[in-house]
Image (cartoon, rainbow, N blue to C red; front, side, top):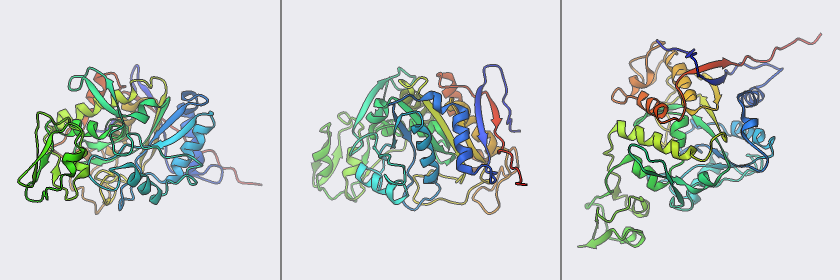
Length: 387
């Protein structure tokens, strides 16, 4: 059965609010109280350039975190005198968010504008085409270096605001995925997903030469009006994927799931490498869709909206979120057909071949945090009837 009180020696604090409200305190005010109680104000200092890492949502997918909540995060950050900016990194796949122009346009369409975000700019972390990156040395089991969006590395502080949901490769995605995958440059994303170069589909290649012209490693050549990749020269940047007008350059999704999960945690370590004491984490356990927000649609939530979590520990907050979801009964009419009872593992019900716990076990083993947590539930302020 699910343990919602993993109270142990050296456990991390995780704070929680549900969606009960009254005239004394509405949900945005309650959310702000959650952040302040969990320590966001002491995390930030005046003039800290603070990256607010969010997912702006894919076109057609409406499960992403509602903009008014992000606005309240920004307003809370500004109370410290810090200077927030909204950020995410470009996608590996070709689509609306594969370059910063399309990415920012999609964000604005989904409600994240300069005016709606209290005058806060959007800065895409890995630049115009996903190549603005810093190589961060971590000396991990799989990665000696990781490739992180430059603006994430350059920021003085980081506030991660993650939407917890299912995920077809990691089982579930929360804070750690928001960090490890979400902050990686295109080269970093490719490094996590695949251990070989992309592959060109000859049938649909039109021999336009765009990929060869923009390949920084000179790894692509044309022969008989078809492109081919020299794997010995390929540096794994993913530029050819973005440049191909026919979608003929394909990622080889051949990384084993355990290695993928461990690499993602090593990337999370790289993101937080220079943010000790300057990082704060929020999980929205709402609209818990079965698949990633990068999909062009979102299916029915598998369980009810539960609430919002905040912590200084990225491992503990993800463990608490999963425990809360698994403690619920599944909603009727969703794609979840097994493990539907309270206490049963919903994510293994969705993706039985994925052991999602590996990411938390490995994250704990490399010092990112602890799976042990003390959950502090913050009740609504008492409503008093006027006499």
